[in-house]
Length: 388
Image 1 (cartoon, rainbow, N blue to C red):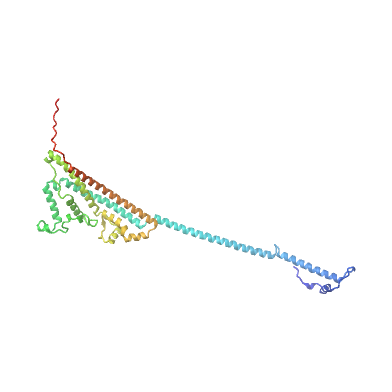
Image 2: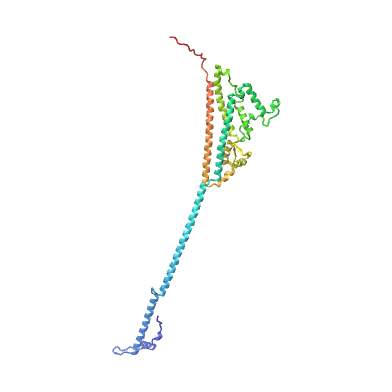
């Protein structure tokens, strides 16, 4: 690169050139001084052109400034690409984290939808307990009904089998041995007042707390049912009584009587069976009984567990608190369980309705039979051989 200096030019010649008087054109004379000045100017212009060319070279595509600028632009572009890459990574990380969060939320939702709540498990336990109690209730009712049928029919080993007087003596002895009251004691029929005097005549013996306390309470309910429906069964028709024509007519009426009494007794026997202690109560059922102030017990009847299942969703504080914390799927399952329980109760009402309509039909038939009277006394028909 050239170094621009004006010191190299003849200063005197330049001064002469500027201050010289105009030359005469017609003089073909070459002024040596002027020639030197012109050469100096040419040199300066040449240097200036060199400087310009050097600047162009310096600023050109292959020059150091262009190279520096290119490197700066390249670095800036790299920074921009790095910033874009970092933004992409941040966006990818955010999307991944958000996707994982939504996946976890969905997994939790699926877990809540498919995991049974404690309330649903409790309801299932109570449902199994209810069904088991119903089977036991039917068994007890059928056993008591069988005994009552034999008693009404005056079968062998039954009091009325031996006659009406024996039947009366038997029922009185049953009362005095278990249910003796003050009047009986005053009449010297028994030694002292019983712990449950006249319990065989009291409705509370049949319907009490929902579950009989023990087997003695079951027997007391059975004795109340006997006094309620049929304290003394008619004497049996035996031997010559059945062989006579009048005995055959009486046998027909006796069988009709037995059938009607069996229907009547069976309804009460089922009520006894429903209240017989048959299944262990769950912890939640026992807690509910304590919450409503009922006596604490570990064994319940069919009627008791049905009562608990029907009433605890209405008044139990524990169940209400559980309902508040249930997830929507758990609430839907609870609604389905309640609908199933409603259907179960409706079916039991339907069965009871069948028995009630049967009793109503029996009443109607008995009323029609009682009210039916022949218009006139008819003679017995004569069956004589017809003569030709």
